[in-house]
Figure 1: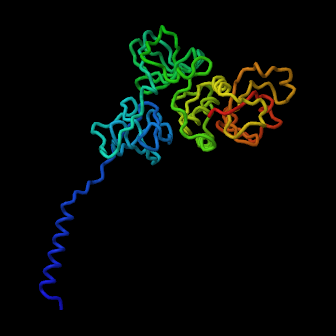
Figure 2: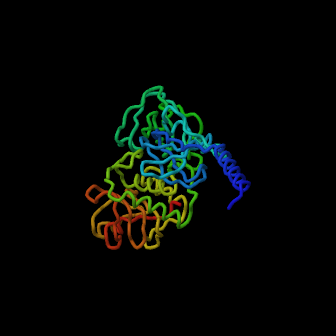
Figure 3: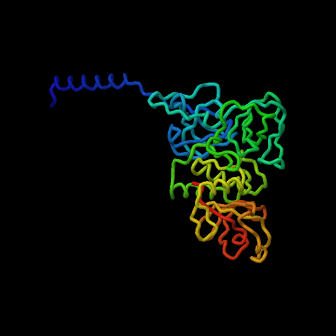
Length: 353
């Protein structure tokens, strides 16, 4: 039989533990805050501008903001349940009235918004188009006094811009139309014929980067083809739009907007090959216009001066991941170049990474 003193000591210890536990404050789970994406922005794997890009969020997407990690980053979940980190810059997300819960434990690591966009004011009415060409479909006319964000200088003639509602398109670089404040993203590393590729360059390199690009492209299989497709959506693609999106989603690298400029970019990196059998998996492949299904239709053509009219991602063994027509089924895989018009149209290919 336990004596009275022992029982009394056990009771006292139990009461002390209960009081101690009750004094501990256990935070309740914070309710997620709804948000809408205002303009294209990277969702990253960690709260840092150097962290891997999970994917690029599109204007109009709905997110749940789990917490405000620090002054520069939100932790968010997208509609598919993926969790990542997004810049707190007001140009990217539109939040509900209440602020997102804050976590004080993280160290600030800002994503430099000025490196991605540059402010500009419209000086006189100008066309906002879906493609960097005067034949590109007109989205609308920008009015004098409107503010736009310059995403990149696509070439000597066109800016890629986003308007105040998040619509992305192309505007003439003629100084009569825009009053640009600050430096143009990507212009320091190449403008004019190279297309001016926007930063950041991919943090992942080598075969891992190649596989990320290909995996990003494969998720769009079957997406309908549209010539001059909008670069601000992924509902339709033309050839260069698809290639560009695969690199954006896969490794966060923004290529120029057209196939000819993407080709020039690859050439400028060096190592372009004119024998398709020397290509490596993940290389970009560039083609001239279709002349016919037989090799004889291309005889006598100087391919060194022929214009690029189509490009694709090389999968190896003669296979191509690309999109070229509605009849072709949109984004598709061509199983072999050998002995086909694709082989006869081939101009050159090489790595964009």
